[in-house]
Length: 134
Image (cartoon, rainbow, N blue to C red; front, side, top):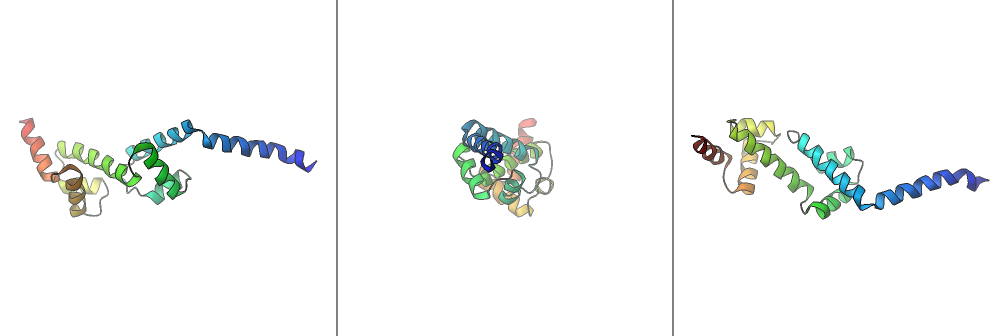
């Protein structure tokens, strides 16, 4: 009798485990993560915050995200922030405004990340976009 009472619970657990192993669901979760990052790019995004929001172990999330995308979560977030920064700089926003808008700790941190990822400073990037407009 005890076993029959637990049967629905056991079936539910088995179904959840089976769904958890499904690679399609993993990819959907990664797509959800990407959308979340894109829509919250102006916020401070770190692994702990994202993993808790998605109810995932941070080590597992980090490993699986890299496996699926080829980028660490930190690299992906930084890349999305640089894409947003480029758009803001093209619109004529100052380096300080962009750094603040994208939740960087300081202008200098933003400048160093931008230069590391693009090869030029944000100011030079903005100036090159200005000259192309004219």
